[in-house]
Image (cartoon, rainbow, N blue to C red; front, side, top):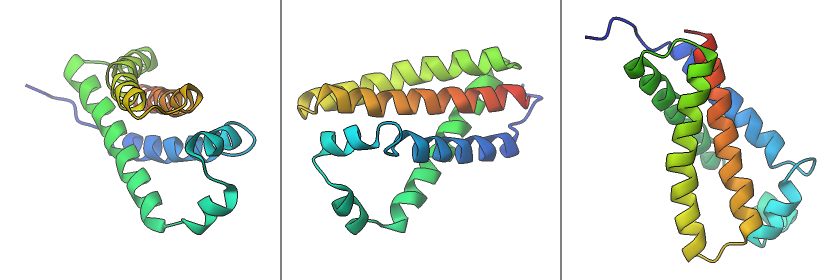
Length: 136
């Protein structure tokens, strides 16, 4: 029987951190230009296609990913940053890398785009794992 509970503050902060990572990761300072090239769009096209719904979906899915990491940590009895990093890496490699890797291969996406997107999520998971592990 579970005696511990999920710290929803840690999950919420993890989701916000995941979103902040996305703002930095996909900025021109890091991978934004390569990402736009990979998806075949210009900055003007991205700006014209802006929808607040995209940010809501991104936050909701970031929250869900952080919740999943917290839930798995609870099930395995994880109580440290190390445990959070291990759970996050395992989830990132087993679920993100495999899922995006398969779809990107069949969609003939540029390898560079796949790397940008896959590693964004893996790093986001690790950040969430660190926050959740530190907050246990």
